[in-house]
Length: 232
Figure 1: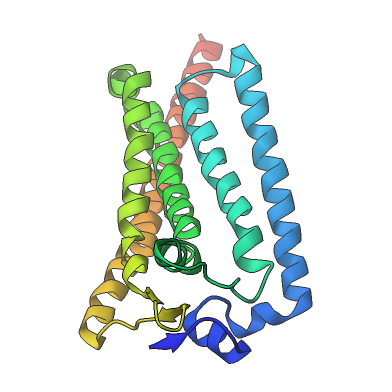
Figure 2: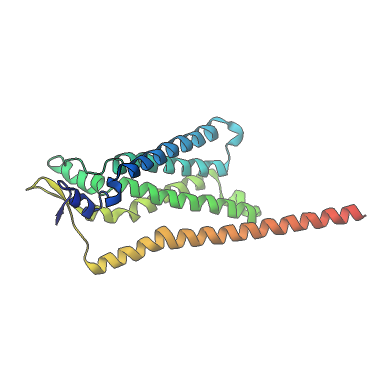
């Protein structure tokens, strides 16, 4: 097992911070991105919540997406602005600290939740544009709340393997990195690729394609009607 505490090379090996994150310029960029993300997403939430005319089914999902993005930017501050992990507390708190904080579990939860929140937004728009007759039945406010909850469940479960990547050494009182066996790493890698990249990109691409196609058909139909009415 490898120690997380102590040398710079240790933190690089364990994934607490990759080598480039020790660069001051990179940390400044992280700080700017986090600041803009926190400010921008807070304003989105504030405007959509404060203005009654903007409260609808779509805005409910957009607010949820903005909240997950805001939380992701908040987690960037402790996890990426400081290149070295803080010392681990003793006892059971040390175990929690290593498995939750050192593993960056909260950050990964909000990242994956944000990805699936974006899928939810695209799904809502897809149904509204391509299947408008089914929209009100499918997207009730209660179902939207369930969809938002499902995004958090997917994010929490999909990041669960981080709990097993880090452990607390009660003898040395430090966090240690525990690599998975090669076969397990392959399975996890395939799962991550599918859940975080392949499915979200594929779904959003297909949904956008059909939305654009439907809107073009509607535009062509309206143009034809206009020409017909103009000629009569």
